[in-house]
Amino acid sequence: MRRFLIILLILFLVGIGVWYFFFRKTPDGISIGEQNVFQAFFSRNISSGTPTPQSVGVEPFVETPTLAATSQFSPVADFPVAGYIAFDRTKTITIPPPTETPNAKPTTQTLVEHYIRFVSRRNGYVYEIKDGGQTTQISNVYIPNVYEASFTTDGSVAIIRFLRSDNRTVATYSIPIPEANLDGTRTQTEGTYFSDNIDSFTLSPDQKTVLSVFKTESGSQFVTSTITNTNRKEFFSHAFESWLPQWKGKNVYLQTKASAFAPGFLYRIDNNTKRLVKIIGDTLGLTASISPQETYTLYSISVDNNFKSSILAIKTGTVRTLSIAVLPEKCVWISNENLVCAGTSYPESAPYPDAWYAGTIHFHDSLYRIYTNTGGYDVLDEGDEWSYDAINLSVNEEQSRIYFIDKTTGILWRYEYR
Image 1 (cartoon, one colour):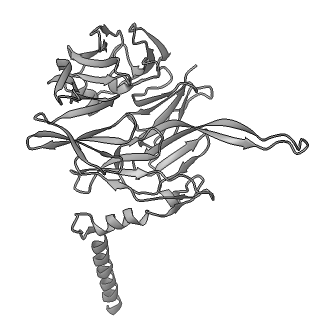
Image 2 (tube, rainbow, N blue to C red; image 1 turned 90 degrees about the horizontal axis):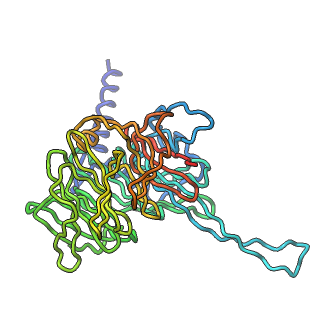
Image 3 (cartoon, rainbow, N blue to C red; image 1 turned 180 degrees about the vertical axis):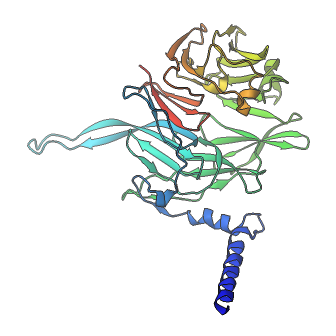
C-alpha cells in the first residue's frame, strides 16, 4: 500500500511539472513550453547531410502515384510542403595551371548551381536540394502546422504563417536561412515576428520591403516594413477591409477577395494622390494576376455556375478571352510575359472560385504555355498520367522545368517539359 501511494505521489508531481512547462502562460500569452521550444533552436548548429528521423521528427508520408521510369514527373518530397522557392546561383571557381606548365596562369570557370528550398507543413523546417542531390535540413526553427510559406527570390529568408494555440490568431514569422559554415554545419540565428493577424501581404519586387494589410475598425490599414519588420510606415488606408495586394514595378495593385456571390474589383494605387485607379470592376468572382512588367492582367470571372479566363492588355484595354479555363492562382508569368498555367478545357459546374478555394472541387489539370499577345496556347502535358491540382507554379526556363504543389496532397512536384 505504501509503495502504491508513493507511485501516486510521483505521478502527481510529474503531472504538475508537465502542466507548469507546457501550459503556464507568460505575459505575452505564449506557454513556457512553446517559448522554450522556439528558443531552444536559436543559435544552434545544424549538421549537414540528410536529416535522420531522430533529428527532424517523422514527416507524415503521403503516398505518391507509381510513375513510369520515363515519366516527366517526379516528387521533390514525399511530405506536404507549405511553400518553396527554386533558384539559381552563379559561382566562379579558380582552376590552377597544370604543374608541368610552370609559367601558365590560373583560369576561372563560372558554374551555375541549382537550388530548391521548401518548408515542411508539419514542423516548419526548411529543406534544401542542391543540383539534384540529397534533401538536407537547413533551418532548425520548429513551428508546427505551417499553413503558408513564402521565400525571398534568393532563398535567404522564409516568411511562414501559422495559427497560434488558440486556433484563431494568425502569426507571421520571418526565418533567416543559415548558409553553410566552412565545416558544413549551419548556425541558426533568431528570426522576427511580425504583428499578429496580418490579413494578407506581398513583397516588393526587390524583396526588401513587406507590405502588410490589417483589418481595422474603420476598414483596412496598409503598412510597409523591412523583411525583419523594422522601419514600419503606414502606406495606405481604406474603408473597405478585404484586399489582396500585388506589388509590380513601382506600383501596388489591390484586388478584392474573390467570390462568385460578390462583385470583384481590381485597382492600382496612384503613387502621387494615393487614390485607387480602377483596372477591372463590378464583376462576379474576379481574381487576377498582373504581369511583372505591368503589361497584362490575367483574370477570371464567374459565369453561369462556371468561370471564364481572359487576358487584358492594360495600356490599350484590349481583352482576349481564352478557350481554356485557368485560374490566375494556377499560373505563373515567365520571362517574355507569356504564361505557364494549370487548368482544363471542361471544368466541373460549380460557383468559382469559391468551390475550388473550399476544396469541394478538385481539378484534373493539364499544363499549358499561353501566349499573351494572341491568347493561343500549347499543351505541355495533357494530365493523362495521373491527376493533379496544381498551385504555386514556378518555371526554370533554362532547365525546362516546372515546379508546383498538388493542392490535394500538398506534395511538391517537378515536371520536365521537352
